[in-house]
Amino acid sequence: MGLESLAAVGVPGGEIRGVRVLSATVIRQETVKGVTAALRHAAKGRDLVLVDAGDQGFNRAVISLRGVDVLRQVHRAPSGAFTHVTARMAAEHGVALEFDLQPLVHLRGWPRQRVLQSHARLLRLQRKYGFPCTLATNARSILDQRSPREMAALSRLFGMGEEETLRALAMPLEFAGRHGEVP
Amino acid sequence: MVSRLPSQRDRRRYLLCRTVPAFAAPEPREVFLAVCEAVTSLWGDTGAAEIAPAVLDCGRGYVVVRCRRGTEPRLAAALATVSRAGEGRIALRQVLTSGTLHAIRRRMQEPSEEWSEEPVVRDGRAFTARRSAGQKVDLIAEEKKSPELFFIQDNGEMK
Image (tube, rainbow over all chains, first blue to last red; front, side, top):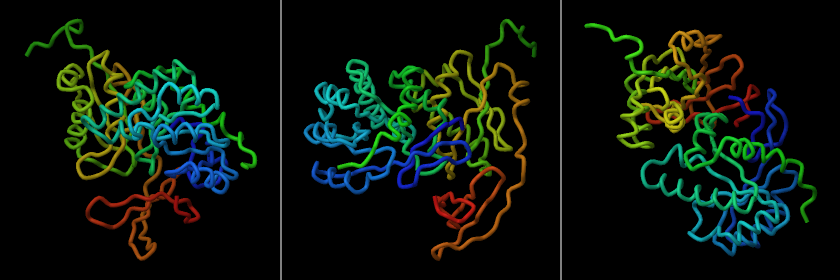
């Protein structure tokens, strides 16, 4: 498929047939307190910690937490959840934003148009403030996985260039091993 | 019918895609409808008319799709959004883009080994386990409508 590495949730990290597997955890909490508690327990020993986005206050608080790598599902968050202030904070704390390609594959019509609009707006903020970003397929089976070439074709739909795509695909490797003991 | 001169013909490009899972054998018509739906949904009717997608070959784990030259990036993006052909779930993994069918056919290979199938019961449910060289074991639930597909390792651990 052309993948050098991938992040998988709930599995130990390692290398399988030349593909580096990063151990990831996804934190889905409605309160910042819940995220902090999850960071203490679930995030131990993980290469990548992803947190589902919420409203603006939640996102700002989560971005400033130590141990959070990626803010995901921003396109599903309420409007105004990720503004230029949040973008600046993400750049300062080195927290990446996930561009989810799964809705581009599975949705049709106006729901997909909304996702494309959201991704294009977030990409504009990313170019302005320079926070890291990642691309994800959120695949549950090999049928949902996409190769880097296909991910580049999909990310071009919302204006992401080839170099930006490659940088976004390499970003999880940069996060790997960043975690020590989370306080 | 008088054939047109090469200089007067439409310039075409051909995309070779591998079907995933490899044992899926969708009907060519279903693949064509899936490709057309994906292209029209993404680029609209005018875009689809410009791209003019056509499925030339479908079988042995490969699909060959034709488009007008210059529209292949748009077709590639649309092919990445194909997730279903008829009743079954599939993905089209792009392998090669070429201007000649000759190059496409050269790249097409037969699957290296035959699939082996064996019945498996897990958690009280019946599955068919398909195994091939270099790939994980695929477990297909024995249900008539939209069977679930699981991927396990050789040691039986569910992924």
